[in-house]
Length: 105
Image (cartoon, rainbow, N blue to C red; front, side, top):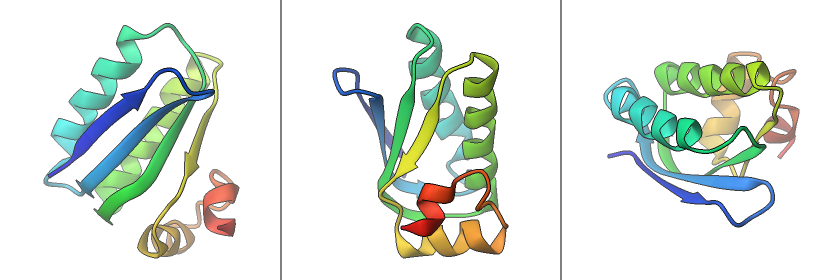
């Protein structure tokens, strides 16, 4: 089950993701992310992936959509604390240029 908690006091603001981010949870995750991102003024965000136990290509697509949303608003998005499985998936999908800090971890 996907869970999202926001830390609005940190710089940049941080969204802590936990559980699974797979095809089964993407719909709920999308709604939770939109709820937070659209209720806040445009700002830089950091997505903390430490609590994610499983991610599949649908989850990666959601992360890419969030990144696109942030780019359109001219604000930043970074990812931190990925599990080894997340790093491997990003490498497999050749996303090093989009998330170099994640793959370099």
